Image: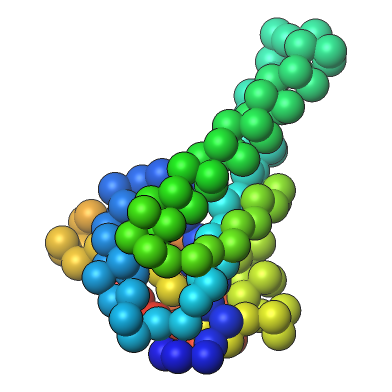
Length: 142
């Protein structure tokens, strides 16, 4: 996996933490810098009952939390001696991951996938399953 530009979407889930651990354990065999991606889906923020000004403040707070999250993930990789770049994008998670992975900018997309059984996959792994079915970029599942 040397000399490949690698995209790694992260979301703060236990699966995301597992993906980070897997990549750190493979650090001698992968290209750096990795590009860490976090997607903020502002359409998922509920705004009923909030004034527009208050809602704008909530959105900005969500953006700041997204930037803080990806900075914390970057620190985990850097503590392991790995160089990483970060991207925070707004959009629908599944579609945005596929669009960015297929943009031609990346050679490999790394995602985690639960292996605990069909029910767990159905409940917790819908994004990864969507990506597997729709992305054209080469994919590494950890």
